[in-house]
Length: 324
Image (tube, rainbow, N blue to C red; front, side, top):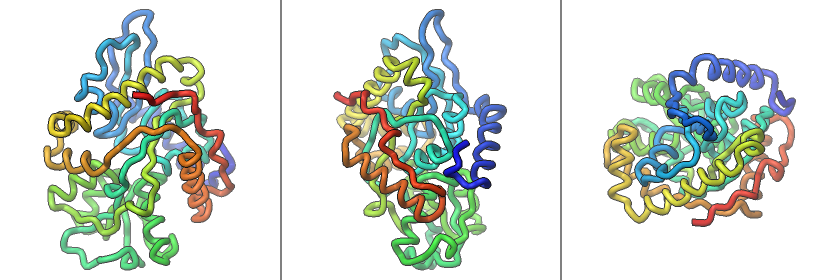
């Protein structure tokens, strides 16, 4: 483990890795039937993520390797699985990637994605009296530790002149956090798409503070150092398929939204809402991407989530192309 993360967080991560390795993966793992002699990519994913996109776009045809999918409810357990080498790669937001790297995870970003950050948001119940981020002082907010929801919470309250200790953050998985909000045991829930759109469409919550203007809207396809060394052509092909599938999705919004809703089990209107407003685009890992990621790392250092400065330049592998 890396000393840049304080002891309590190192302990939490170690426990999380053990839990993922021993228990969580069998529950989420969706193994493909490997053909003898073919490489196997152990692909981590999140709800409504890359697998749904690729399946909707028929982007998995003609593979020369097999994929073993493992789905996780949030970035934190996916990062733990990457750290344990239980998966080779997976989609992860900029803030969770910083948290993982500070914990010593041997992983790099091989592809960068920009999107509108509106759906990464702090939600409250529709009847809540809270109107602005400043109203969160003294209130309880549910989110995943080290997640993009954790990040937008901290960005929102600091932008409003509050300190992290001015709010009570309760670390809960998305399903538990949603339940806590709807039952009134927390005042707010900080989350991301498709959970935000689903909560809005179902009238369970409204957006109090969105990430638009607070976050750079970056997420990544990350891969372990060992997978990059051993499976580079496989990872390059996989990334290229994701890029092409995303281009297809924006040319076929209705068809993709319907397929996404069916695949992940949410209402079509929620699937379309979160998809259209995200406006995702795979981009080159350029100086601006690195600078924005450094800003995220510096902010985490500022609020005490990581204990030492982190230079992010070495956490990117720029040798993977994203040409359509």
